Image 1 (cartoon, rainbow, N blue to C red):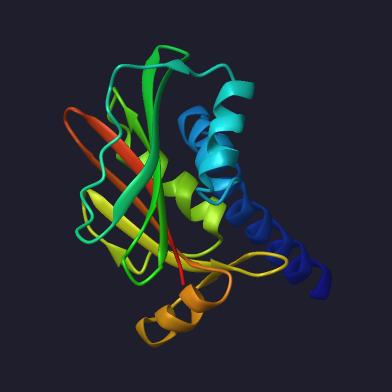
Image 2 (cartoon, rainbow, N blue to C red):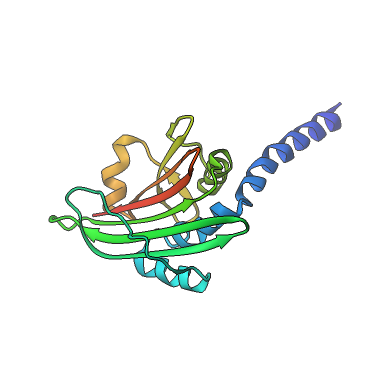
Length: 185
């Protein structure tokens, strides 16, 4: 009886791990993770990663719609991933009080919100704090070994430490957007 229960538990655990593994294999999210996520939206690292991955310059202007942030640098790039067109935009800036803000966004021509949502959850290692039919928001900070989910009382401390990161995945019939915003005091 014990060996059957052990086998059942092992089988269920393997099945639970299979979904995130498939989700993390999403080529669109992987393109985002390589240039935005793995670089923690650090502008210079984003530019270097985009160049190394073959993203070509684009005429699309990287937008900064964050009130109170003076943008110092911005870039725009394009990439074809399979049969999907991706547009990368990134910028960095600061508030008058010296808070550093950077953003890295990938727009996807084909809508696949569910796939991107699942891949984002697998990448962060936790469920989104805000989750709706077409938008998911993950708030976290980085530790030495993983992303640490944040609750509202931890935002300021995270921004004053390694930085607060906000990953947003949204989509509609026209496409999807994966965006990483980093705030560092």
